Length: 484
Image (cartoon, rainbow, N blue to C red; front, side, top):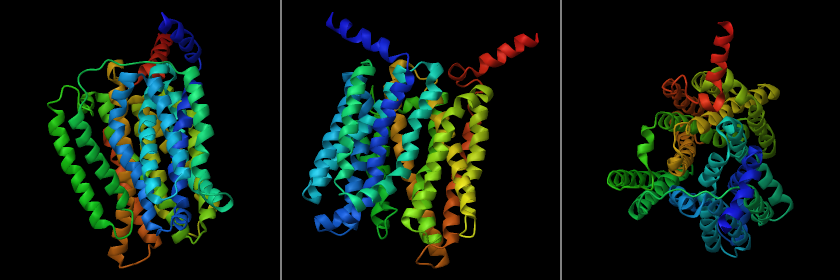
């Protein structure tokens, strides 16, 4: 009786305005994305306060990645067992507590432990936030909701560095973590008011062995990809990647025998989901490489200051925002398949133009190219994030969101790895110690070639994929009737 009285009014209030739910989830993710990128800017200052070398501070970043890798696969099962609202709200609370502890950290060791705790909250926020949106939004509003949800992933890495520079210059690095507190508290209040509690059906016992195997595998891979972008860490990163692949193979063998594996690879047999994971992964390599390569190009290749480079890169955030009102209209006119094919080619060409950037280019032209490339990338990821769940049943939605988020995070890190390897490989080929403009061009070309291969997978989408979401087929049928 008490459950009925508690749930009914919340469902009625939350359902009509999908934008409120999308913005609640997006705000939590923006907090997380900005936190990670702001911290990278503050590491040298933090190193001085802790009395350690700047390279030693990289563990503050990698410890968070390690926590993400271990706990993301378990997020779907947690949401099924305890309810998506409870887990999402708790994830924000854990992230906020971790942030407070990070701000109070007296030593580097304490900071690392606090970052691990913060990572547990972050690992639950990403996939469960997406799950909350899937369960709360009508299918006809899914494209618009996903457009809002994608913005933090694209804006976070862009806004983070200049914000970090401002905080370190005019405030104290501890404010990087304190600013999460009011955002998190407001987020928890809005989650309690607007988001419904939904639990899934447990399909079997918790996969403890799979949790360990996947955690070691994903943690090693993410850690290895991250370390590959650091000078002198090549051998260690290769060891970690090899370890991750070994445990990954062990997990796949285990998953075939377990009734409810922590990561359900049978989801890849669902046509729209499997194709979206593969095509989206290839494209996300570009998204991962871009925030790594562009600042280096503008600072080292063009000789600009960090502040000037940051101002130019803001163009990518503007492009991502400009996409939001356009997505639903384009999908309704062209459908998902044609939109993904055409936009994928245009987006890849736009990103490939970065390889041609030179200091004598007019800066407004560089800015326009970055706005357009970000526009197309943002559009593409909105499509992938939406169509992936077109054929997923409600019972498998939690498993699908944790699976998809795991691969998303892995591919973003792999993008940094491939961008760094391509840059260093070109430098080694040319016998240079400092990257030249040609080395950056080579790196951009490599990630662009990888991204264009997603077109072959986009061709595999059904022409009618996502018709219920976009209304594409309904529009065509209506036109046909009118002509008759």
